[in-house]
Image (cartoon, rainbow, N blue to C red):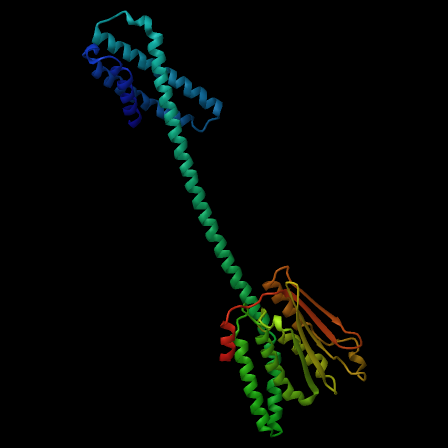
Length: 365
């Protein structure tokens, strides 16, 4: 209806007003309105034809549209000419049918182009809206998947990190029990306090959390202090951390399982004890960590080839945690040192902490 109102206005302005008002036939304005009303009614027959043929192939659809427009234009031409003859009384205009038909064809072709343009625009808007809806659904689905992966990843890391704690806790409680049995109350009390501090630190740090390297070293030293209660002077520690990497961020409780392996498989079986060394330095934009032990004694041939009795749980634990936190961007190697002892070499991206939060938390501990 809007399109035909526009055509009526254009027709009136371009044809009727072309002549001066004195030259208008008295019936001209009414005739123009009547012609547009008839054209509007005829266009109502075109719309279902256009809609039915819309899903056809382009060539078939074009032929159907042109045939329908040609027929409707012919009908409109006959109505217009008959109305003009009846209103004006002239009967000699049938010889001008071609001109009248050409004008009718032009008007309906224009209406058809306008109709198809509006339909294409509406379809485009509908497709755009559907694409936005699909994109929103995909984005929500991706967020849900990422959230689920993060939860699963965190759960896995939690399991990996805490699966070693029962071993350590079992050994420590046995040591405390032994101290109590031998009536060494002060040593037992001190060991309980250190165990409490270590477990508090272990539970406080989440498996996804990263801490400054110097804080991680403090946690390792706290663990080794507990072990020193068991081994007395059989266990010595050698730590060398470059100053520029002391604020480097590392996964919490990363070194403890490696140090525990050294205690369990190198220090404990050795009557003379041994030394555990921890090194950290920068290599370009990488952080290099090394944990090694002095290994077996010369009178322990069964240990000459390294930690032969180790189950590898600690190293596997660390490797899987690093794989989750640094996918395809880390290295961890274990090899035997020259002579005796084992070394674990870790290479991860260097992340220097600039926030004072960790320091504050460290002081709170």
